[in-house]
Image (tube, rainbow, N blue to C red):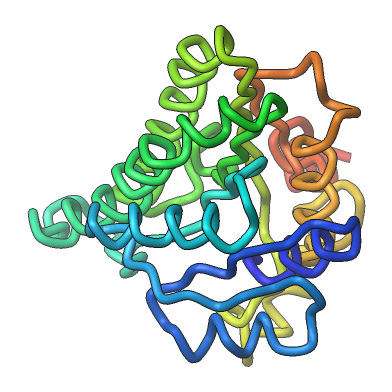
Amino acid sequence: MGAAPVRRLAAEGARVLVADVDEDAARETARGVDGAVAWRCDVAEDASVRAAVAHAVESFGGLDVLVSNALGPTADVPEVSGLTDELWQRALDVTLTGALRCARAALPHLAASGRGAIVHIGSVNADQSFGGHAYSAAKAALASLTRTLADEAAADGVRVDQINPGTVRTRAWAGREERLRELAEHVYPLGRVGEPEDVANAVAFLASADAAWITGATLRVDGGITAVNTSFNRTAG
């Protein structure tokens, strides 16, 4: 889900710093994409975040857009009794506090650009219960952070918005094609799961001048799952 926005923004003419704690993954994403530069960044470490932002500013002469897409551990713990403090804290530290660290480091440069925008990648788990206590709590809190940052940053002309995707076909679903087919057929009103490009298109919109009067918003890119109870409707019918 992080690679598709890199390709889309680069296709729009942006120069992109591909920041990932897995430097090899960052290099693989940047390979073959004009204007993309790989950089190792651990959003759980403030110094690492500040170094990544500084490198982007130095390399590109400024910073116009920040896309926060880092995700903490998502261990499947169905019952809260099995959720340790360590798992909880790690999920929040990367998914939520990591986004805060990135925004804090980037905001002065985004303000200086005169057209700055931050796009957070959230989840439909912020809107409804789809499982995952720590993951869902972190994404819901990220939506709140999006609104408070939008309030603060507006005076500097910086917009802050969030995208909440539904099920997206990423490597996390590798080997579970049958489950994706079931979700597409029985759960999603539009009859398919999302593709990374669906998220990338939303990122490109919110980062662009076309969204110049949008801030503090949460855009659901979810095939209608949070609007329509497809399973109930088909059963009732």
